[in-house]
Length: 212
Picture (cartoon, rainbow, N blue to C red):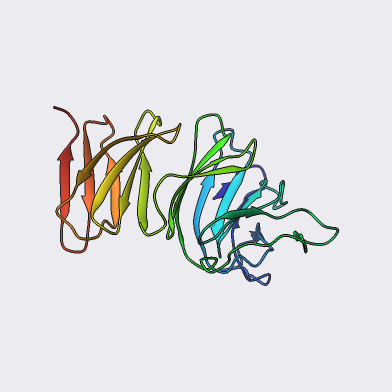
């Protein structure tokens, strides 16, 4: 993503030594080793960037500064890491890290920027960023493959590894569920008018009507 005021392109990288490409100046936004960052999102006010990698969600400003403690998504629970003098760490905190290196598939802020919808390899979560509480919306055995908000941004659709499309509200309620003609959902996208949903899988692309 670009920064028009500074005229540079900012990137996320787990490598602190990212070199310019063709002489173009690059800014390193993330200097924390998150491994492979597999999901990223801007907050609605464009001031915060959330990045998900190696079981943690980090929060940055556009200058590359971590602006709050990260949130850890594990196999069975989420733990909060606290800020120390040189890094984020709490030596007294214990958590289950068996799922720590599983992938984030999507991060989606709500319109207020106070909630974060998480599509993760261990399931679907809803995080209240004001209280740091995590609500598990699906059991951990369900692998969330993809997620997309509708045009009004009041409904989120998710596709799972079992071929189901789940529709969620921002209070964490399951609105409805449909089954696609695919064993695994790889991608979903709402029609700009919200009347249909495009679904991609291993063998085909489907267009499902959401009216009637």
